[in-house]
Length: 613
Image (cartoon, rainbow, N blue to C red; front, side, top):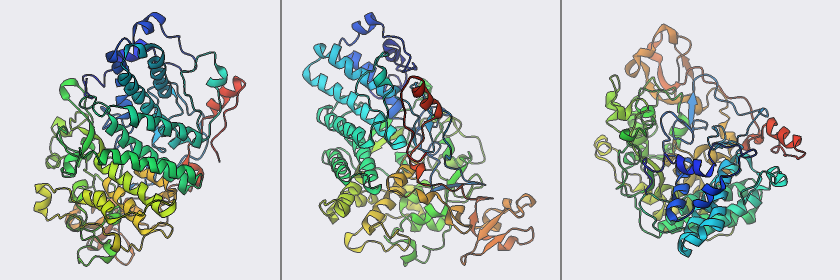
């Protein structure tokens, strides 16, 4: 059985069999003893149950119009994108409720993670319990250890998500029964103790999950790739937030080790152009992709992420000038220091040929009014898709009928997790110094990806290698961030634009203040340099009077008044864009709802509120 739509995304039978889907964790019926006793007969039974985890954790582009954990439409709360009018605010008060007992619980876009919900923890604990009490006698030792590794991996995945959102959370290492009230209503455990348990689960998973369990099934390498993500987050969070250097070192060392499991296997390489990773109908032969999600119209399993990259659909928040300025020039310099005379013009066409190739592959090469900033992201649509702008789209690039495969885990993330973990260990925690060979295996290997024919025809060229002895001198670098780590962070920003990582990266680096867009001249309010009369004359209408604005090179803001069309050349300002309300450090973690606190109180227990809320 493989990770495809026929088997993975319709796994309701296992859930129904074990009465674990959509049931109230605190008030659930007992498992049907006869059914449960007759299950767990062989590996097929175990696999059927385990496969139900895939669509929750290996989300890809999700399905239909669902935005949970999806790139582009789900991860819209970060400093890379700007909308018209007031930017979305951080949460400022404790919600009435922030909990669920369902496997279908809503996710929290402003925290890039799950609700206060332990249904998936319970699901993994059920699998662990049944392996121990029912299935073990029917499995070989190797099979038992493999499936125990799978169960513990998914438990680690869920707890990583919960900790990223809430910090301290109650840790459950068993399927808690209805009458075990002291366990059901236990207060939060310290995040460090929870993540130590996650660490143990990750180590066990890497040691016991099979190297090959069939195409598109979870294996040691896929698990290790995700573990490098989990441990990088927590290791850097612990360090930058001053929680525990000891734990930070421990977690980052595992991040390095996990990444090296993948890298040293030599099973994957950077043999694909960037665009093909996100807009291909079939990723089965892509050498960079460890795991992908298959979409198939015949099975009515489709998505809409490609449509929201097609040039016509409106996302609502779009790439801003601050993001644009973060892209390295293809000569290896930041734009301020590049000798290329076009490096500082900021027209989209000049950006295409002066910046790292990922810029051209991620943004449409002309200004479009369907973007708040006129810079339209099309990372997840093919080059063919945007030829339909102004006409009817085929199902592959219109509506929610897209069938492009979604990369779930790829080599670029593994090597960027690896090089950052190594750099933080070296800079701050006594680790071995990063070498040029390390950069060549990570950042420079990514930069050496092949270019597709269309990009080459435009004049796009590969970015030169990053040299440890000559790191870019970026005047925008934060004083508290060493130059090497700054460049690693830049590489993540270019590589993962519109994907899962930006808000989580800001949180773990303790840089949430980047979300404060500041005064009117802040680059976050602007898009690229546009000649409105030539490129966007449709905006020179009465309805845009006193709204349409551009910023000149000297910083002056010019407002369209109906008679100054020729002056409307400059950095385009997102219409009426303004800053979000002020916020403080409490927004790093989500509060728990008052309903959940009262529920504990009604049972005679205490649920502690998140710090500072």
